Length: 281
Image (tube, rainbow, N blue to C red; front, side, top):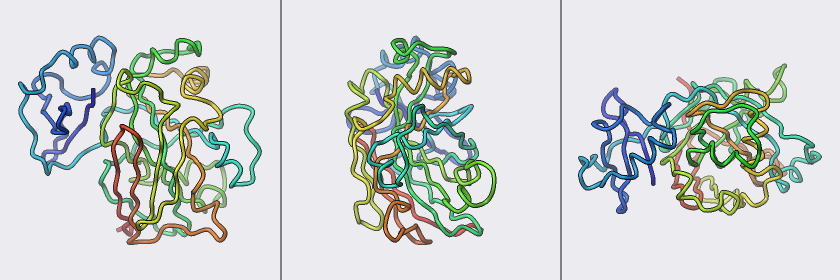
């Protein structure tokens, strides 16, 4: 099952994606794709609905992030072997975690805002894991039961802010628009193996990243279990699981994004994102 959220004026509404790719409004069924709506029983209820009985959404409706009420976005750094190699860093013994501010959330086609003072804006295509069942100290073998589904994400990063502006890297990860998600939340039952998904990203039509989740150092189940040792996981929380090789920072010389650059990303079964880089107001 694929779920989405779309904008109707200043209101964001939930939707189900039918077999033809058309959005069907869920507003009469649930208030949002958030919180309790992500619990297993609630998702089972949505699966029982015939999409043809729901109102069709205009095809030009702009999309919002596919999950609402996100409490936290947990990023995982250096989780692909080839990405570690291109950055010249040793493989981590444990997952490297950081947080992205929820104010960085954006839709799959929203512009990406170049912050003032930015000079090294980078891209990272990622698999996003959306939590459905709450928990803490989750055993790894039980971790899949806590996943509502998956989405495409991009971890935009301002490298100068991240590495050279003092403190931890949080400030390089959290500018407005730096966490676009979507277009869909694809429920766990519709993703047979999260460790067998191809990820791709291009800049101005040139492919920069072409990797697979099979190359993760710490797979999805291990990450869910690990994060839950340090903080409880709640429905709607998102874990961004790292990026494969091909980021601007790893190029010689680096070729960072500029105002006007066009970033396109995709993942098997999870859809596609398109972002134009624009200057901060």
